[in-house]
Image (cartoon, rainbow over all chains, first blue to last red):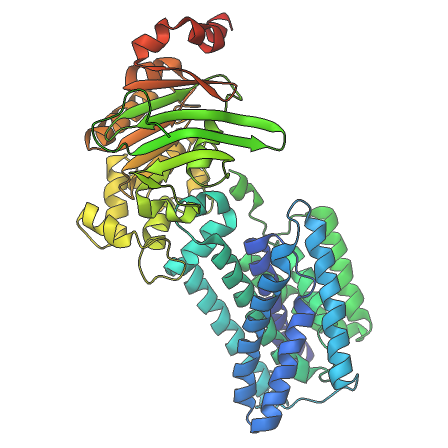
Amino acid sequence: MDRLLFLLATGLARGAIFALFALSLVLIWRAARIVNFAQGAMAVVAVYVAFAVTGLTGSYWAGFASAIVAGAAIGFAVERGVMRFAPHDSPLSGVIIAIGLVMVLQSALGILFGATVRPMEVPFDERPIVIAGVPVLSPYDLFVLVVAVAVMAALGVLFTRTSLGLQLRASAFAPEVSRLLGVRVSRMLTIGWMLSAAVAALAALLLVPTELGLSPHSTDVLFVYAFTVAVVGGLDSPPGALLGGLVVGVLMSLVTGYLGATVAPIAVLVLLVVVLLVRPGGIFSARQVRQA
Amino acid sequence: MPSPATPPETEPRLDLSGLTVAFGGLTAIDGVDFHVGAGETVALIGPNGAGKTTVFNAVCGLVRPQAGSIRIDGRPAPASPTKLLGRGVARTLQALGLVGGMTVLEHLLVPLTAARRGAIGAGAGAGADIDARTGTADPVAIALAELEAHDLAAFASTPVGALPYPDRKRVALARALVTRPSLLLLDEPAGGLGADDIARLDATVRRVAGEGCSVLLVEHHVDFVMGLADRIVVLDFGRVIATGTPAEVQADPRVEEAYLGVKAAS
């Protein structure tokens, strides 16, 4: 029972990161109708920036802020410099460009920094707090949960309560008429990419220190899990990404705890296949509403 | 270019001359001339594929004409559709362009907030203009007043996807009117509507025109346009084949052949 509680708690913390990263995929999907396979590689570039800034200043928080800024800057550069020129007639072209981008970014990081795995520091203790004899979350897990909830709440407010959010939604779903209504749709698209890439960078920054450490491939697995989360939740559904992230995080934690760490990735992929077979639009897909 | 056959006393709100649009080798509209005067309601009719919607798209900057000029209030039309609102032009689309998950009120807030100066993504700075024309600076108040005028106030927080088609169509119209345009372009406003809703639409267009707004509409519903429009422009194969009052146009044998005859036979 104690073990179950522990696994559930750590699963939630891990799941919150998956949910954040999946949310970043949902943001781009809603804005540009592209599944951005380069999201992980873009995020790891931002984590390298954070690593460098923390190394130079000695401050975790300076690195934390710079990862978010760098993420947004990379989102801007990728949208304005690359994705804008993707042909819109086939969804495949965006996917292929994104995969090309992964190779370019990861090779560039490998050339610049080598393939060595660099351990990253975290600002809080990673050992679990013991409450009434039961080890539950570590202070760092709590920090991750707080950051994830804060980011999600901020995005929720942005999209539903501000005029920028209104224009982002309008241009994502009805671009032509939005232009006629005076919305600068192409600027909204750029802002969507920047938001999304910044959220992805933050998620990667939270996860990488708890894994082996920083390397050009640190986010490969995170991307696979987050992609599963996004598909499970429905690519166009932010609440789906949230719940999907928690489901996948807890599933991984339970499978790791009871069956072993090597089985966990397989369990996640099995979940992906089952959802694709049973409900390809995702469990929380709003497709019916959208078509009405 | 010379002005159209019957030049209005003041500068026309919309003036097309020699407008030509081609897609690849296909000429969709070919040397189209007509104008819409201040406060005038003009209907653009013609068989399917005559080029009616292409005229609209050219006016809105969605397609680039190969030749000819489009002038709005005497000045060239803006090249970018996002600047249209700033020039007092609003348009509805045949496909409506509504977002099912957004509420009715949110739809009306989109053009109002997009036009606000200083807002990220602001269009042409038409916000102050809209404030002046509506007498308030509160977008929500402006939007709710507009919804009231269309009997939609009760649905302000309803997602548009939950409304029946005629109501959704009124939302699209309200979204165009909430900006207080001086030129309103309506693409098939009566399409898919029953008699009651058409009567309501007719009253709305007459009210707006009575307030000085010029209206240009593309419409298949012949009885509706003949009763509503001051003037009819008939397009066939991308050319204007007749212009005149509804009575004149109905009596024109070329129109009968190209359009009304076909209609009567079907």
